[in-house]
Length: 147
Image 1 (cartoon, rainbow, N blue to C red):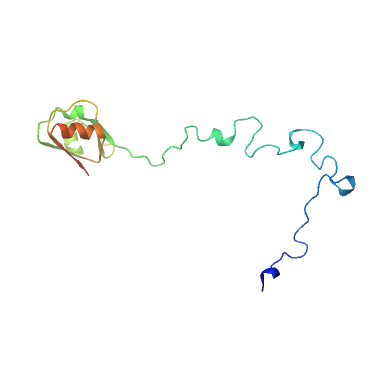
Image 2 (tube, one colour):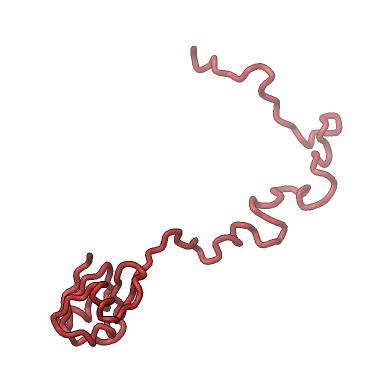
């Protein structure tokens, strides 16, 4: 078999429609587009997705430029200002905070946020730290360990 043998079968391909070549050709004058209207004019009718002036689907769906996260990460959050009441050299984890009554519910792994001031040296073990929280804890002489 050669490349020139690979041709469509007889009758499977139709010749292209030649429009605007007179009445005898079958698609003369208006070329099958009707008499008037937007879709009969020269050039293209409307762009893909055009809905006649209605807000198109591609602008209706993602209102905020992104879709919501399907499986978001949920953290138990606490600010460093709440940790200031703890004694110095304390090892702080989610369970120790729940025992102390500072955190009441376990909403997931512990995340330390940086609102407030901290003057106590603490050893924190949490799943995540914000940059400002890490800076305040280390400025007070404490340590941050990601678990």
